[in-house]
Every structure is written in C-alpha cells, then in structure tokens.
Amino acid sequence: MQEHNEKRSDQELVALTMDNPSFYGVLMDRYEQRMLLYIKRISAVAMEEAEDILQESFLKAYQNLQSFDDDLSFSSWLYRIVHNETISYWRKKKIRPHGNSIYVDEDFLERIAGTENIITDIDHDHLKDIVQKVLEKMDDRYREILVLKFIEDKSYQEISDILKKPAGTVATHINRAKKQFRDLTKELNVNFNS
Amino acid sequence: MTESKPSQKALERILKGEVKQKPRWFFVVKNILMWIFGGASILVGALFVSVIIYTVVNSDMDLHREIYGYFISYITLCMIFLWIFLTGVFVILCDVSVRHTDRGYIYPLYIIISIHIGLSIIVGVFLYAKGISCYVDDMLGSHMRYYYNVNKRRAVSFDLPERGILMGQIVRRNDNIVELMSTDGTLWVIAVDNIPTQKYADLQGSDHAIFLGNTNEKGVFIACDVKMRSINGMQVVSFDFDDDNDERLLLREKHYEMIRQQLNQMRAALINPCNDIRWRLER
Picture 1 (cartoon, chains in turn orange, yellow):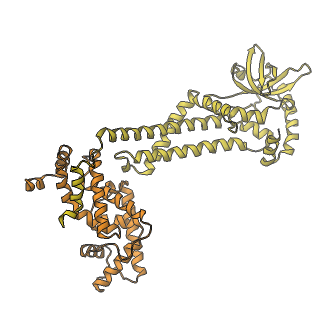
Picture 2 (cartoon, chains in turn green, cyan):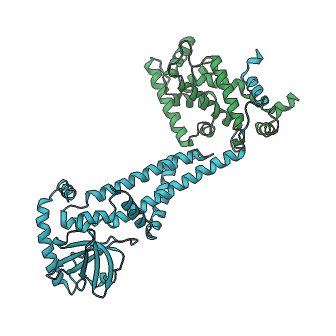
Picture 3 (cartoon, chains in turn red, yellow):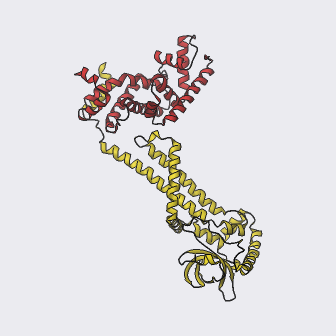
C-alpha cells in the first residue's frame, strides 16, 4: 500500500488528502529531507529550530491546501510556504544565535564553486569557510535566490512561483546575487578563473 | 527517533483534528475581493484624472496671466499636484491588491502601472465628459473648508467688480440681461449686449461665469466678455483678449483698456507669487 502511494503524483495525493488526511503523510515524507536542507541553507538556524519551522510549514500547507493551484507544481507551492515561514522566523529572531551558521554541504560547495568559477585548488575546508562567510554576509533576498537557482536547481519559472515575483525580476535578482557573491568573495581574497 | 520527525508530529496534530483545512470558498472570495479592490482603485484613479482635467480646463490661465503676470496660480498647481499624488497612491494600492491574487505576481510592476494609468486616463476622460468631475469638485469644495475647488479659486482671485471682473452664479437670463449672484450674495444685473456673439449662446442659467466689464452709474454691470465654467468641454475656456474681428471690438477694447489699467496697478503690488498669496489671504 505504502509502495503504491509513493508512486502516486503530488497532485493525486493532494486530491486524496482532501478526503483522507492520512495521505498528507506521504506528501510530507516525500519532501521532509529536502525542505529541512532548504531551511538550513537559507537561514542559520539549529536543527531543532529547522524542524519546528518545517512542522509549522506542513501544518500551514495543510490548512491552505484548498488554495493549492493545480497550475503550480506542489513542490513550488510547498517551497513558497516553507520559504515564507523560514523568513518570518528568521526576521523575528533579531539576534542571530551563536554557534550556528548557514549550512553548506558538499553538494552546495561544488555547485557554487563551479558556478562562480572559484579556483578550487585552495584548501577544501578553507573554501567551505569562505563560502559560509560570504553567504552570511549576503543580503537575505540574494542568498535565497542563489540557493534556489544553484543549489535547489530551480528554473526561473519555479523561482518566480516560489518567491511570488515576476520572472524578469527573478532574472535581475539572480544577476545581482551573483555579482554580490563575487564581490564579497573578492573581499576575502579568493581568485576567480577568468 | 522517528517520533521526532516534523512530518509525524504534524500528521498527529492533523489526525487529532487540531488543525483543519480552510474551506475553498474562503480563498475564492479572497481572490475575487482582491481583483475587485484592484479594479476599484482604477476607478478611483480615473475619477482623480477626471478632476485633474476639469481643474486644468478651468485653470483660468489667461486671466491669471493678465492680472498677476505669471502663468498659473499657486492654488491651481497645488490642487493638480494633490490629485496626481492621490492617483499615485491608488496605483500603488492597485499593485498591492493584484499581487495578493492567486497569480497576480506574474505581472511586472511596469505592466500594472501602465494598465492602471492607461485605464485611468480613458475612464477619466469619459467621467469628465459626463460632468462627474465637476460634481466631485463642487462636493469636495462645499464639504472641505481647505479644499479650493474651481469656484472657490475663482471667487478668491476674480471676484473684483470694482476692478472690472465679476464672478458668480447666473441665476436668470433674459434676452440681453443676466442676473448673477456674486460670492458675497449680491445680486448683479449684467448687460450682455457687448459680449462676443459666439459666447452669447453659451450663457446658461444655474452655472458659474466670470464677466469682464464695467459698472455704470445705475449700478448695472456692462459686460464685454464672459467665460463660463467648462463642465465637460475639452477646450480650455478663455477670454478673447486678442480677437480683432469682432464688430464690437472698439467698445470691448475700451473696456479692456480700463480693466487693464486698473489691473496694472494691482500687478505692480503683486509682482511675485508670494505677494499674490499674501494678498489673497488678507482678503
């Protein structure tokens, strides 16, 4: 039965959830890990906080399930809710907690280094440290869009749906985010391949 | 370990009935209300545009130029800028409401602004042509003390019978005689034989007008020109200061000359806008 449910599309599961909330569990399982990583990539929250944010996001998504538009992908819709919930939590916490930083995993590091042509012969741990510092220095909106584009691998249209911004604005913000990333990296004396 | 998973915690709360789905109609109504609000803000913007047109058409630039020597009065400018500012506020409100609809975020800001301004102008011209802007301007003027509508501005600037300008509401028209109630409540008898022929037909009861002329020894105001308030015409209403084809030109020129001499005396004291404003406030 569980195997059968896992083969169902998101849209099918949403439709089934309307009558039987148990199906919502399958949807949540499907996105749990991805969303936890996303929360940690755009905010420097501890794991417990990320889990709380995610739980609240799942509940909010369930409450608003009737507003889900079939023209959107469920993934984009859920990203939007998780994104808003994270930003709202992040802004409420005026003082950033000590000991927590933006989560940079191997995947993240490889992609961002590749995208921005950072010379990768520098020490791996040092590079990770630099990327972490740069991301924390970046404007929130640029960091978010960089994560969505280069780490979550979202298309312009999907980012437009997640952030509720026109596609043209998304493109402009991505360019500005890349520029800011490059500028901040240069400030830390990291070279780029031309 | 698995019990601490956010998805399981959330599912438990859902199955216990602690969290319920909002009904579909709630979102449908919210979406419709946002579109209605966006549409309403365009209508309000159109109303403001129509009042801007009405204010510009009735700005009395020609008379201001003749009397005060500068292009447009300070108060007229203030009123126009007030309406432009309010139109801008409603453009922003329209943008906000459209962005709160389901897919409103896909429209770039410039598209929303262009559509809002375009529709406001089209509908605004229509509202002006229907005389709605005149009604709004009159209503605001009568209910808001510090709102200087067209009539109040004219009363402040042009109710100067001793200097050859008379402003007020026409209460009766009888052949070549017009009765006019000035802003201080005085009933004036005006002889309109000498006004330009094409303007004679425009004289209508119950509307506001500015007459140029002179008061004779019997207290009758001999008019040489008139300017009616434009309620829905697209042409800026003006006096015929440069008309040299009229058969009554000589007589009118005589009146004009007299008025100009009197106005020149005023102009000397009112050479800059600050003096003008001070003068009007003192009145």
